[in-house]
Image (cartoon, rainbow, N blue to C red):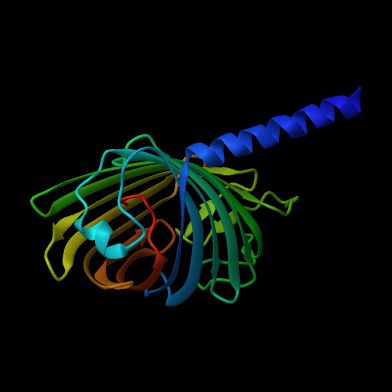
Length: 271
């Protein structure tokens, strides 16, 4: 009986694979990205992301990057699972995400990541809090954007749950190194709002980023605000920016950012 049920499940799975493969157009994408930032302390990392785009409905650009830049068709829907690996030698992470775009201007996603932190931080007292260990991050996210006459506006909201792998009998908090915040050892919830606005010209893009992070349990907050300049050429692009970073742990610091991206194959999503 169990063997029969198992075979039925296998047959159903194979049927679904065949149906999905026959109905959905697929396109792989990948990119490699390196970034440097000055605050709260000087740091750099490199990451690579691999995704697969399933076109659910409508028509969109081809895999050629030039077609993407010139194509005016924006009414389509996609589903995109992806995996991302990032490393800065002493901080290494893996993240799995699934994105659903009912139309190209709305992006709904959920994901889970695990990061191994093998270093202390000078902006935390790592004798009193947990700095080293595995940090889990679950999230749901919604993004949307508009563009008109070269101007653009992007909005993003994320709700995240952070967890720490090691149980601490003393109940000491653990560090969210990315946002420089203290997190409850039993799990911390964060609300993250990010707004990007600017103007695209023929040769470059100018814009501003506002990113606000708030902890629900330990009530910490972090804020990043900076102006940026972006330029692209074929598969390469870079961003330079300057502004401020502020958190309840560090106060206010000058923030400088640099990001270099190589787009191996473009994604079907607009942003």
